[in-house]
Image 1 (tube, rainbow, N blue to C red):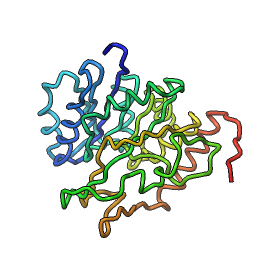
Image 2 (image 1 turned 90 degrees about the vertical axis):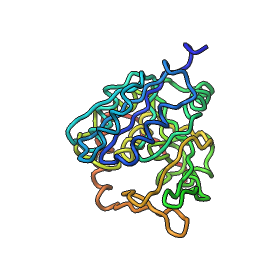
Image 3 (image 1 turned 30 degrees about the vertical axis):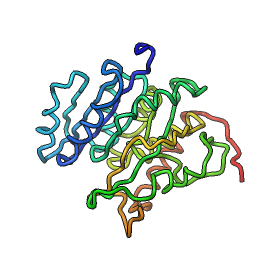
Length: 269
């Protein structure tokens, strides 16, 4: 019955992506899921283009929540979105990416199969990667790119270390209390871009496990304006500046580990 289904909050944080954000919102609103069991929270983080006009074009949607704020960076936008959310679970969606219509029902079915505390879920689903310039999907999925395709359905802190065993935002699902705890601990302006790269390991440290759903339930769009990735001869290539982000990320994670007061776990070799 519908009242037994989990409630979801789809969080879309936007900054100057007026050309994409409307498509992201539409893909979120058009989920094959009871409309009273999910909401779409859109935070515009001080855009200077016509993003606000595009977002307000969806004001008739009964389950749409909008937040317009001065620019606070991505971690600040995520925090505002989580504070406005009411769902049991939070699904992130970058404003230039897309959900597929079956995203929420398939995630709900996966959650029902998990024997894990409902307030400490970190789940990653697979994604298509689209060459938006050509309008075609590339052969790799996101799980192929980062090596998750080779992993079991659950990855734990005692397993061998992986560089990035996560999805990007449009493939991430968190228990709302879990992501709220992480964002409360994060300095707002410390991670103005790619905040998910900090939220994911912090959540992983808290839960001790990541659950994988191998169904491709969204599309990561490569359109030439992506800050952290691109395509070379049809192959995904990251464009990360590790020197810029790693020291700040590690500093926060060390502090976060102290807050958690967790026992040390020996990683497998």
